[in-house]
Image (cartoon, rainbow, N blue to C red):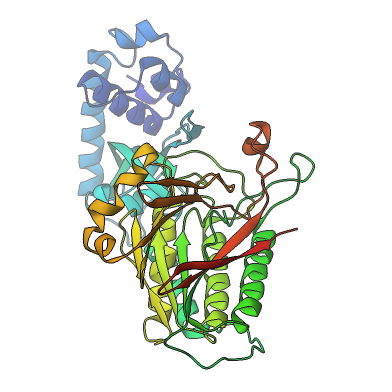
Length: 457
């Protein structure tokens, strides 16, 4: 029987026929989840779905298959008995319909023929590279590999029909983290500022600078909202607060500067541009750019403040950037941990307490406590609560200054923000709040002595 002629009538070479037969065998044995129609399309088999599945008299029938492979083994034995040359015969690859699909959930499916050994079948990085995906940018979700033994004069070569599902990584790679910290620690220097340096004092006031809800990385078009906002504007707002606070500090006897850090400092939490819970945000920058820019901005501001009084930073997690803001704070700790004038709190508790003489201040983002906010201080900071006379809770999240409430001796303040509107807040009608930062001046004996409003025009 002229096997090649019979196979060519179906539009295939022997190699292509063997490849398709291997796939069909895997399907029959339950080792492949491909549909019969998918196999027909992949190999351009000129048979209907039912004819292929119920093969009996065509080239996939048992009689033809047995005779074909018996003849193939006979020829291989003849070839192996002949003297071989040093030059291996070229190996022709079977025809394979490679394809890449974009799925509804944002993942990608890649189906292609690859050469791979058994060891690398369990190597996600190898599979990603074989399909053309950078392991630093993509994560392997699943993989299915069906083996073909593709023969030639040089021996048997293992080919696999490889189908993988991948999705973009939502975390920064270890390499990117190492590169960032190396650049920051070794090469970055705060911007030179010609500030007057005051002598440090021990009996002065506490100067609190609560920059709430900065949302560094947010993008808003002025044509769609009541004003544009982006990371450049965010930096200008932050620097304005630092500059005006320093001018105010110069006229006072300040023993310590207190800055809560966090409270939606960053607008999103991952490389996908979403909040911690997965809500997509408007932005015009990558996560890495946002992270680096924000860290450098903070280092400049903290360095400037530390020339006038010791600075203490307290981390308060928000709902937009729960993980990334903590990474920012850890970066600040790594940068300033040998600086005697800067103390960085890295505790991840959702609420923080700061005791200053007769005053106790509680910080919380304010999105979770609800009506319980007036009941947690006396439990979580019981001893400090008993030692102090003046108690306040400073909350964020609402982006606007709210009416001051006093419940059971606790003054509750929802503090304003300097951030701009985004499309969602504009469409929802959350507009018109005065963009400002309220700085608090605390006396050790008499409690709150005064405030300074720094308004962003």
